[in-house]
Length: 313
Image (cartoon, rainbow, N blue to C red):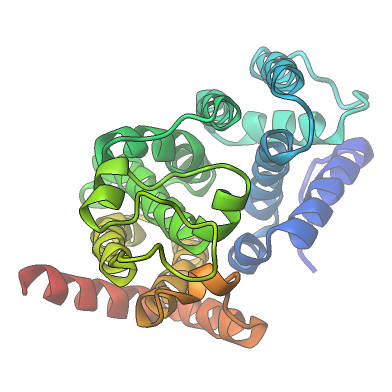
């Protein structure tokens, strides 16, 4: 059984709390990080638990003003973490675990400020006219998570191109977020949110939105989905350039998490209207299969080859 050296009982309890949150609320994420050694797995759980707290505020039932205040309070807590002001006797287990993780790994905690900025955009009800505008939002809520994760993973010493590792981690986060947006178009519409760029919606006759289990009358919904799928696949292809820069277990973690989302993207592409009928997901056995293949790098290499062929074609 793996153990983490030199961790006090209060800090270990804080990590266990974060791991429980991760296991309960982040099935796709949990499949990936279980491939990591203990210290990295714990640090990733702390990052997830803090991020989950921010997301839950944005998705909760409070009034907008109350959500904004809670988010700014969370930003103040993050400032305390960044300032080294959280001790192991603090009553907030997420802050305790995140503080310890930040001492152990070069985690760019400013990216969590970006996450808060992104959720504040949700609270305001921001919409996006172009992909360039949406990309800024995606970088806040997902690209930043990629960069935070890279702080835990690190890169292999002397890995070619490692100076671009943060860029590739950011791009892979964008790929995952765009996949999420496609998966959740109906759910988001029910919550009054539209993320896909307005110019894309107009191009495919989908400006009326997605409040029903069928496409808007006269819309080319399948065309819209396939257009966004091509964009996401290009992002995956670029983002997977990160994998050779990581050690085997970190690479397996990324390959498993991203591989699950890439397979989800293929499922959406095969039946675009399924996202209007309900939540599209992969069964647990398929996620486990992707995780096992991640250890060998098989899925990542195969995906990389397929996307390179698509782009040349």
